[in-house]
Length: 302
Image (cartoon, rainbow, N blue to C red; front, side, top):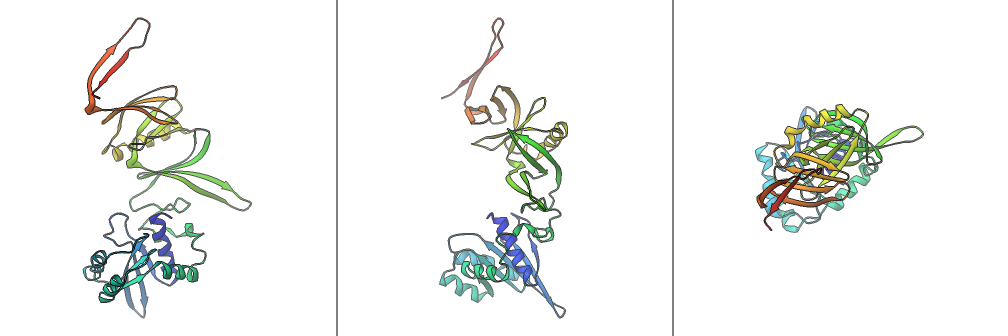
């Protein structure tokens, strides 16, 4: 599972034992993934939890840095829950700082005992358990603090239908299936807004362009096409900090794009065919002929 899903699973595990859990804001957590609290007879005990989904054992240096949070944040203790094992040196160091260790074997036992359904039903975690989040959009995707849904629309990408959920940070592509008694959705792909290069707009289709070295293009059509274009355009400030699309032109399946870093000719289904970075362009010339389209000739320093 993804790192965030692992943290949500741990949060649910502690919840079953009576703890109030709060997932911290992703990427700004200083090593703290979950804050757990329990109240008994008017006394509150608070612990900090670090979730480590890793195959290699943690080192002593990393453990010392994490254990110091107990004193800085004035909590009762810290817990390190890992999918790997711990060395003898790490266990001795943890004992000196009241740092509790949960290794992969112990964690598996706890999950089997207290949360036997957890590995198949982690998607029903309440929104209150997920990083101070306000809303859940299904299939385990939970919005982060400050993230809000801008649109939920049915779209066609190529020949397949998807439900697209657009937030100010992510674009989720979901498929939906119906059973006898219920409907379920499955997230097929998550695209971070910061990965978006831009949108090539045509009469009834938008081509969403994402990626860096390996571009990915999504030809999107929808009955609410104008609204979608407006929403995509509103996301521009979020991705203008990196590489972004300046101009684009399509001829058949070939999309020619000019970004602030390179000139790209790409096949919509196969990706980049040719690209020239600006720093390698040494000359430009427009050639025109009778009854022919003008040609832009780009000279590249090879």
